[in-house]
Amino acid sequence: MLRSRRRLADRWPTSIDDVQLLLATMQVPDFTLHDVLETGFVTIESELVPHGLLGLRHRRALGLVDALNRDGARVASPKQHPRQVAAVTVHDVVVDGVPAVRRSA
Image (cartoon, rainbow, N blue to C red; front, side):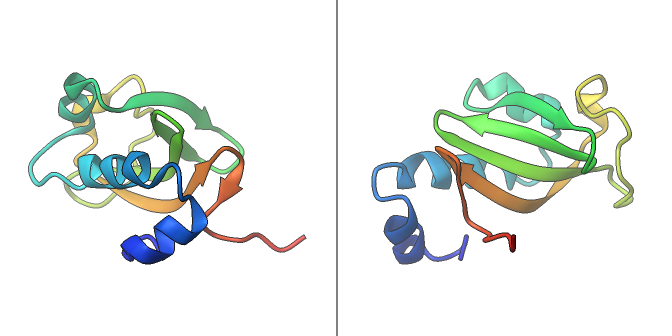
C-alpha cells in the first residue's frame, strides 16, 4: 500500500503529500538519521519501547520504523545515536490515528 499513490490518496486524501514526503525523506541513499533530521522535514516523535520501534514524524504522518546501522543490525538507541542509523524498515505509517497496516483486534 505504501508504494501506491492512489492507495495512499484513498486512505488519507488530505495527507498524501505528508505521507509521501515522510517516506521519501526516510529513503534518501547515503543519509543517516542525523542527516534526515537536519533537513527539518522529519522529527523524532517517540521511541515505542514495547515494540522496539522509532516514531518519525512529518506533519500529520507518523512512520513506525526499525532503525538499522550499515550492517543491517538494529541501533539500540537511535534517538541518542542518529549518526549510526543508516537505514530504516518501515512497519507502518499512521495519520490522525489511522494506520496503513490494519491490526487485528
